Image (cartoon, rainbow, N blue to C red; front, side, top):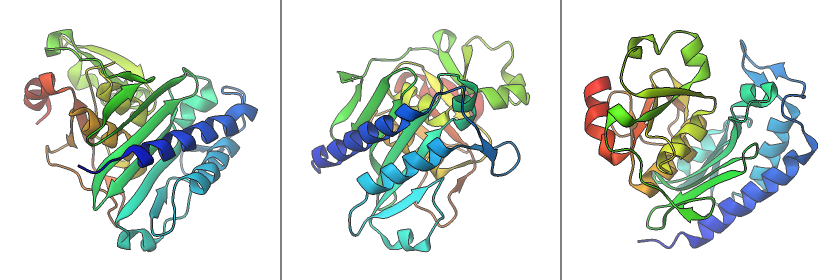
Length: 256
């Protein structure tokens, strides 16, 4: 098993630098423009993107970020960093503590290390294959053992659009959470039991969380149940499901 200590050090250093860069911004009191539709963009997104680009990739490594123009050059790289400088910009602008910085390291299409940091709550979740996962520096906690007792994180936007109406009356507890990367990280850490999004997302929304799920031995698949690959020419992903190992069977029966 490859020693990922250096990768995890680089991830933590990048998260530290990104948090420092955000000191000059106040969540809930920041101007935003809109890229398409109601997808917001702030100066903080761009600043964190620059910080991560300066901190993470070295010569020979690729780069894919929501806030950087994509280049096909990454497709020829064995190691690629896939990041979202601020996942949950809408919540950041609104002042809701449900946004994060998300980093995923991909090797040959496989997520091998990642880190997610929520500056609003101070939570940091990092992990790598062969190293397990830590939540605020502690080993991960075990999640629930049955769906009846489960807490499931759901997108605020998807709830608002009615995409979770089909689960009304189900026995599990649904809680709204903004950032998908943050929700995936919480599943990996055993802080919530499951989350899913059955609408398209981009690789930068998911890669950091997917790396943490892999590090923790949790279950993360595409919405049809197949295993994802990463660093694809088209970064759009049709949907994603994540849960703790104990709930995999029940979640499969519910969704697949």
